Each structure stands twice: as C-alpha cells, then as structure tokens.
Image 1 (cartoon, one colour):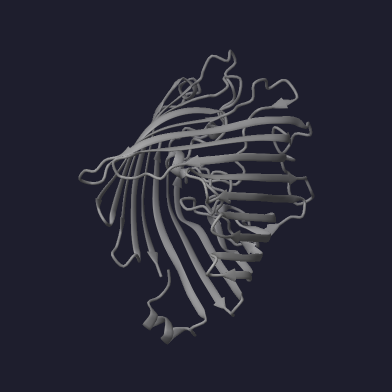
Image 2: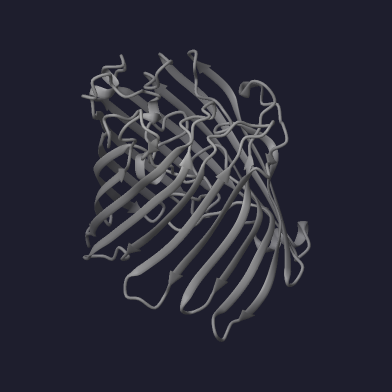
Length: 429
C-alpha cells in the first residue's frame, strides 16, 4: 500500500515505491500472571515501518526500516520488556529480488530473494512476519519461490536475525541487529493445487550453537508437518487440520550443558459454519494440542517448540499479555466472527487451557510443574476484538480485551484472574 498514483508521480520516480505504516498502541494488564511479577502494567508502544522498493526490471531492490519502542511505561517490577517489545531503529529488510523465469500464459513464476528479509509460510504457526507483536522476525539468507498452475514450492536457507537493544529497553537506545553463523534455519514448503482439498507440506530445520556473543538452547530440531483445509463458504461447513512432528536435540535452557533427545508434536483441529444472515456470522470450534515433557528427570524432551511462529490468531492477544504458547497445552475453544459493516469486524472467543503434561512447566507464566503433579487446569480465557478500517484503507483501529479466569495452576502459585485491554490506531501510507 503506497501513495495514490498522482501523488506518487510527483514525489518519486515511477520505478520507486515508498510505503509504510505507523501504529500507536496503549496496553493495560491488570494482575500479572507471570511468576516473579505482581500488580499491573501499562505501556504506550509505537511501531513505525518505512519501505522502499526499486523496480529495476528483472531485479527489485527492497529496503525496510523498523522503529519499535515503548514511549512510556508504568509498571511494577518485572514488566516483560525485551527485544519482543522494543527494537529501536534498525534494518528489518534489505534484499534483492531477482526474477528467474516467468510465463504468464502458463502461469509460471520463479524468483529468488537474497539478503535480509521477513517470511510468512503456510499457517504462520512456525514461521511468520509478526503482525500483533511490536517487533518482527527477519532473516539473512536466500529464499527461492517457484509457482505454476499445479503447485507452489519454496525453499530457503537463512541465519535468523537477533534483535538487540543497547542497555535498558525503556531507554530505547539502538544497537545494530545481527545474524550469527552459529544459528542456521532452512526449510522447504510445497502446496499442490490440483487436489479438491487444499493442502500444504513443510520441513523446517533449526540448528544453533553457543558462541561468545550469545548463549542458546543448542537446538538441533527438524520439524515436519502438513495442513489440510477447505475454504469457509456461506451456508457450508468448513474444516481445517494441521499436524506437526518434531525431533532432534535440545537443552532445557541456555545455561544448561545437557543435551536432551527431542520427540514432540502439535495438532490443530477446526471446523465451523458460516451463516447466510445479518452480520455474516461464522462460528468455529477449535482444539489445539502441543506436547509437554513427560519426565523432567530423564534425558528426553517432549516439549514442543514453535520456532519463529505467531500465536495471536490462535490464543488471543500477545504483547504485554500473551500467556499461551504452543508448548505443553491442551485447549478447546469456540469463536464467533461477525462483519457488522464492510469496514468492521468483530471477534468473540472462549477457550479453556490445560497442561498437556502435568509433569511439565507452564512456560507462558514461568510456572514450574507442581510438586505432586496434580495441577493441570490453567484457566479459561474470554476475548473480544473490534476492528475498523477506513474506506481509504489508510486508518485502522483495533480495540481488544481479554479476561483470564485463573485455574488451579495459576491459583496455586498465588496468581489471580487477569484482565488485559489495548487500543491501537494504525496509519498506512
């Protein structure tokens, strides 16, 4: 999304497109659910993106800057600020896109990106360009795409970029982001277009080692999966299922020196119905399962690792909130989507959360497994979201609230119910 044609011609040459957005979001969390933190948190976050795309024929040069910072913070000790919330003024993308082959008559396209770039792959559960989070994942490497009328294929080899801050996150002092050779991330994605049911297949491989610049979990993980779905159509049921298996080696933390044998899995099941009625209501029934560690005292790990994925669309608002990740959870839920107008969307969601393994921790709140392994019920979350987009698509408003009713896992760690709200305004140019 850029300037209109008339303005663009008067400001930039025809081969150069400038676009971006600026989002201001106020967040308030009442009652912290994380161990080691108390009270409430409030913050005002600003994220600005500025992108330039130079079309030089068969080569496009693309650069994008990000400035993600917190403008003020009123928080009790332990507010979860990090490079997940702050990334002041750095290079998000800087790559060359080279067209390798194109045949419009046969609907064939092939191109490669080389440099630093962001990625959305498949359902975005394992590789994504973050939308809700204040900061965004990026990668240094090569990314090849091939598409025709029968399939979409993609292969990449990268070093994930480590976001960095100079000192206290609240100071918003920039420090150049860096990718390390000791962390390799590659993958292959395939989606056939000739079957009646949409489907996609993927393999991701992550290998990381400690070096003098950073300590890691020394993950050496291979993740394979498949996703099958039908499109949601009016007066019809739709179906969506994703199954993912993961194996390799990992460590329990970046300070550990003990390698664990990883065998983990994730499943997402969903079905729903779109009604031919006012506001176009769609109801969805969902269930997710992400395995947890069966025995913390052995040399095996069954705790699923979500890699570089997003979770907003599955588990509600993240940001300062975000108690749930794809690790050691079993969670059924129901969602209702409405479209009161062509510019407005409404979501109401209700989900219950249990530990998949009572012997494993609830990582989202930093809560270790209970001493007698008796607590499994984390809590129930109610979410409501209202989104509005102007006719020009230049202004977006997002109002969201979530209420987490604490279950045994939280209550037995002296945590009460939590309430989270945010209000965001985005200007797109």
